[in-house]
Length: 535
Image 1: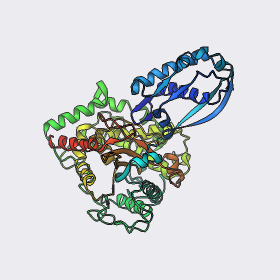
Image 2: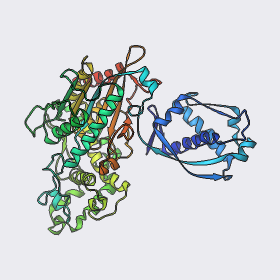
Image 3: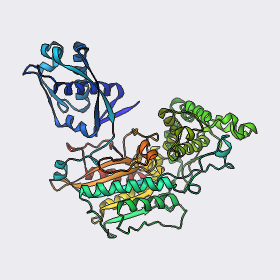
Image 4: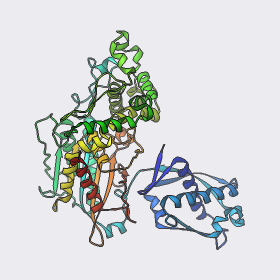
């Protein structure tokens, strides 16, 4: 179900969201009422005003004298208590008795215009739009960023299985197999430029800063796409800083820091992992995972024109694997968690991945879909196959605890480093998914993206602040470029930021300013490391 985030601690489903929007429309209506009784008012607490940083409202049309205010009164009344129940009585709104009897307010009924509003989610957290008051209270001390590489080329030449899955030619890529594309480099430079503006505005660095080895640390996995992503990012982030991008090996090899491999294996671990994987499919277990994706598989086959493909024309036995829903898993020491070849999820994940990359890279969306006219929802369904594949392998809790440990330890050490101001780590979507799960990040779906968890080039950002009481506070967000920003290569700055979505940590409360105690965040890291040691 679609979830809309109203504040870092308040999530509403679509029906609840509609009710809250109706209530907010009434608040705005009151600013236009001239004949209102003097005792008719709504008092709004700061938590409502804080909505301005998360949602923008656009007036679509004014309908005078068409509202049934008796019905609206009941809707608004319900919405108030619905929200109050979500965030605690009295924490959202304080209302007068007159408002509760809205439908009998004569002057309001005569003159109030109903504003029909469309709420446009722009998942922007405080990181992008923090007020001057906030900056007076809190000083940004450090940021640790874990980034996914930007757009790469897939393995989709005519001789590959992907090439034989379709009669069409895949996009002619600007880079070698699995390497960062030219578009990916431009997009990452733009992201680096945004982070430069953000860091200067936040007071972390002055403009044109030349960093030392103590205050800046940039490390990439030793894969070409990761090293190149870090180079492009730092070129935008500190263009005169001469930033060194560190990587362990000559490209392209996997660094153990970023390699999402299982390092502890025993019968109990495998049993728990398989139980958690099967739970994703409900009563049908692993088959259920695949059956839940059946419509997405069908859409992929349709867009590929699979029936006209070389595989189909040659009646290749490989096609049978696309009907196999009994996926077999591989959980072996010093290997990434994986699936055996020959099942639908394993094989169609590759097609999903290639289509996602082609959609980003190809300006013409119809051409990207091999001539099919797809809606945004269709593209989300195509990407959903890859999302599920990644979640099953790297966000299953006990597996995430196992494979995320090196990065959890490293990020913890960086956050404990007294002189460090900015850490930038470049890896893969598997890294972001595993780290988020290991830290206890609650479930989320990103707006403005077809990949709902870890879109291309996305970044988990942990900020550390010093508060007015001298204590340390923290925030955690995921920063990413929307589909439009990716396809249009939009220039980013503080006035046109990337998407920034606040992540919520289970069992931890934010303060009135939307921040966690830094000790609570560090405890999440410590719990993740303890859980790994207990495997």
